Length: 410
Ligand code: ADP
Image 1 (tube, helix red, strand yellow):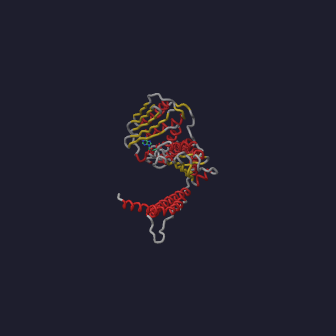
Image 2: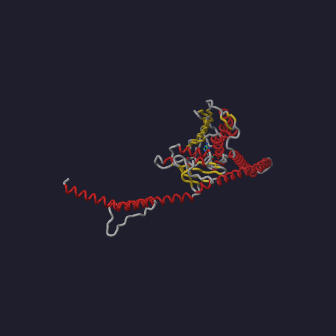
Image 3: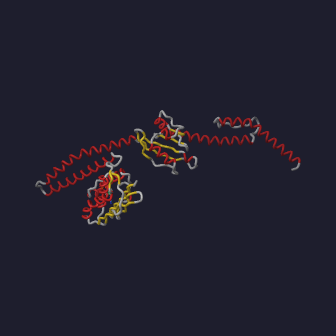
């Protein structure tokens, strides 16, 4: 580069540096105000002068930063408002499991302990809660399904949700706890009420039935005899409902099987098989038992397990008009499986999810005609759960149904 050009360029750089240096004190002032949380600082032209490039750039950046900052602030305010207004107790923990945010409801619940900065397991002292929390912490899942947990005298529906997509964030966990004690207590009252009413109905029903049977021995017209028989059928139906309701309420009051004894499942299925065989034969069904393999004894309640299987086989026979009903006992690697399969009318897919609910029947008139109460499968499910097992059903309309129960082997 020739001499004059070099000179001009040097002059230009010098001028530029001076202008930048001229705005530096102001820039420092601006940065200080930002540090203090004031995003309102802008350069304004002094007298007739124009803003330097650097000042203009600063103003532009500050406009943008200010906008982002205001949006962030607004979001944070909405978040905080929501947190303080919701009825659920909410906590957010960092990757170490320490509480970083706790809302008003949670603080009230834990008072006088202040949860912020403490490990969540330290402030919510419950083994089921800690297990639930660790399950999400140690898994790659984004959230766990809601779980019912008792804390002190109250019941909570607890939900844990994991953090965002980034690795560090993904270990942040939000805990939401809804107090469901009221619903739980109502449920208990309802169950007690049903239990008490059923109990009270039992004696008068037995008495009515007794008098009906005595009446039936009297001379009467054909029509009167038919009416009496209808009354008796209905009393018997009521009796069955009362017995089933009493069984259900007794099962619901237990956390585990009543008698803990060693139950020989092979013998149990054989007993139920011979007990139910006459009913199957009477309907012209083929009735099969496949219980070849030895299975280890199950620790549980003999009476309940028998009732469970009788209910399933009774349904299989009831809802099958031709073909086969099969009871299977299978030993698997770490579980014992009982299957009841039939080639009956099947259950439409839309009903499958609900058949274990109390009083749920697919076809009310058919259930009534066959003497069903809609409580049999509820009882079965309760017994299975009390024994730590699982129950599944597969069914196809017009083809048949298979109920599969599996008990884990310890
Ligand atoms: P119910 O006393 O009416 O049989 P359950 O609780 O035992 O009551 O069964 C509920 C309903 O499920 C029945 O009404 C029936 O519609 C259906 N169901 C149960 N088992 C079978 C089966 N093996 N085949 C077809 N439908 C069945």
